[in-house]
Length: 317
Image 1 (cartoon, rainbow, N blue to C red):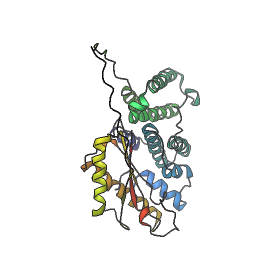
Image 2: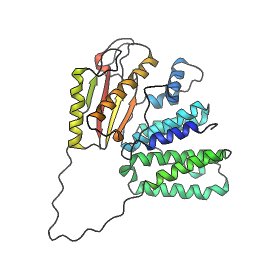
Image 3: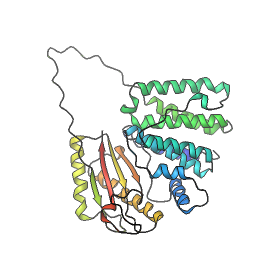
Image 4: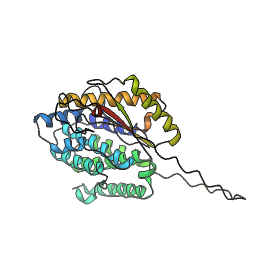
């Protein structure tokens, strides 16, 4: 890595989301490095790299941890794309695809890197502590911090192997240590004996949805007749109390692909803001946008289709 400014932004983005969610988000404003990489791939210049495009376009499935880990690795791949580091772009993109397919890789093995001998001990202890936390349920308890800890450990490994940018090594190491500290299980408190057995807790209400908000052609403004969908999602969230709310933006196949990527981002942002106003905490929102890459209804290229101009709202535990 030649510069660490963007990596620092990636780390802060992931940590500010919440411990229950886990994913970095894309902004609807200036183009991100990820959007630039996607655009470069579609135009064939200046660098044809299919892996980052595939990783950012895939349908992400799995737990809150794997969804968050997919975005963590995708953020690292986008940063490396900006640095023209082909090897790291491919490595992080493949890990993002594995996580997005609900088959996440483990934190990188110590033996995979040629590390300075003086640093092997600390990295080995760090990986051991991380795996112990995962074994103690951290992925389920705090999926966002767990995903960030794994990504920052791999970042630390990469920087330590290069071993020529002390500030970068220290930043990755510090981000890993801070995230790892969040993974500790709360101390168990011994309950006082009760004269009568406690009643069984009521079962959690079943998750509702998904909720679909449809948009007009070439518009990111929520139609008046769709506002009720968002209000219903907000009301239902108070009852079922989801741990994660996924917000995915889409377009139909009419128009330019790069334009549609930006349009789907604006739609995603509009719905996310409306959900926050409806009472859903912004901290549990996991946002993504896919342009025309994932149509609900298969159509010819260039054809308008109302059911494809949508934002999906999905509740997860």
